[in-house]
Amino acid sequence: MKKTFKIGGTHPKDSKLSSEIAIESFPPVPRVCISMAQHLGAPATPIVAKGDKVVVGQVIGEPAGFISGFVHSSVSGTVADVLPMADLAGNMVPHVVIDVEGDEWDPAIDRTDKIVTESSGTPEQLIAKIKAAGIVGMGGATFPTHVKLAPPKDKKAEYLILNGAECEPFVTADDRIMREKPVQIVIGARIMMRALSVEKCFIAIEENKPAAIAAMTKAAGSYVGIEVLKMKKKYPQGGEKQLIDAITSRQVPSGALPIDTGCVVQNVATALAVYEAVQKNKPLFERVMTVTGNCLQNRKNYKVRIGTPLKDILAAVGGAPVEGNMKYISGGPMMGKAIVNLDATTQKGSSCLLMLTEEETLRKPESNCIRCGKCAEACPMGLEPWLLNKLARVGDRYDDLEQNNIADCIECGCCLYTCPANIPLLDIIRVNKAEVMKIIRARQAK
Ligand code: SF4
Ligand code: SF4
Image 1 (cartoon, rainbow, N blue to C red):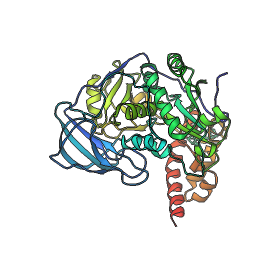
Image 2 (image 1 turned 180 degrees about the horizontal axis):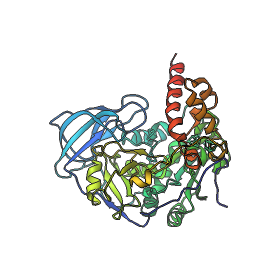
Image 3 (image 1 turned 90 degrees about the vertical axis):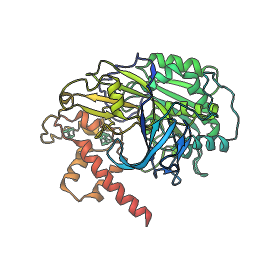
Image 4 (image 1 turned 120 degrees about the vertical axis):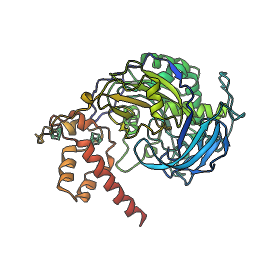
């Protein structure tokens, strides 16, 4: 039976227009700008300076706290500058700018195609290697993977769940890596199972990816304890809490973490990065990214170096596909973020560059709430979006918003998608959630 989560959810058109397009390496660019803030937590501290020579895979940024990560050069060349620049979201963060010269890799990296199946090392050694490779959650959350693989002493992991749901419309990067690198992903899962000391791993894939399900099932067949599950196509099937509910029937309580239910959820792309780090000594400096849109003919699944300017990617697919005000999204249309600056560059969490026409993004005029309850029915976190919207619009009702669990919102957009009154529920909730989170953090810091 196909598994799914129990509360809420919706069914946007999946528009997987690039699912049959094989992964292609993106051609070299003359200059990359690598952000030091590609992970949740404190930005890394740059450790190179203008004029330094670097090679592919060399550390250029060191973690600046417990929740932070290493950053590596994705190219060889000369550091042109280290300066604050606007990232994909428009935030000014430190970047290392490198003029590309050749393609010289750190000689420790195994660049052959040979699949390395055997691995050794204690959980501590494996986690240290994953940390040194700068691996973060590649589904978009960008939480440092080594932190997730080392739960606090009083919490015990029981299951590893690999997220291959890829429930966001349009995005096909995970689908492609599951079809093209299934064995490597399974070995990555085995390494994470060893790091966590768990015996069971579920790999969850939505039913609309039959080729990926077949490839992953075949690859997992030779290993005890790894099971591929066919998930129902329902958004947001790939949400951490939704996957845990669907697979284990355990609920992550409000304010708690997945590990409180004995589960650790990692993305399939993260598993591939773990394989490459542990088995091939390759840090995370490139990733697969979908470039797509209804308006784009030349769709791609590119393996792209981190720090590649988006405008170079746009140029490679033929430029803006239509005249007028195009909208560019980093990620999928439901949870992705609008890109404010095409000079910004790819990051570890960049799963997709989605192009939408002005027509596709036009918002219909907002009308009054008709109390139909559709938003509450669709909310996978059991919230009442109409009430959160009402409280937020009154202003200064942060206590009430907190009591109504606005902090639990996963910003999935199901409420906005289903509202017949076209109320921008997600926008309003997101802004107010950020304020409530600030209040909660300030309280916890006292
Ligand atoms: S965006 Fe938040 S409030 Fe809206 S449906 Fe998703 S979880 Fe619920
Ligand atoms: S879906 Fe829209 S109209 Fe219906 S209750 Fe929610 S906010 Fe109101």
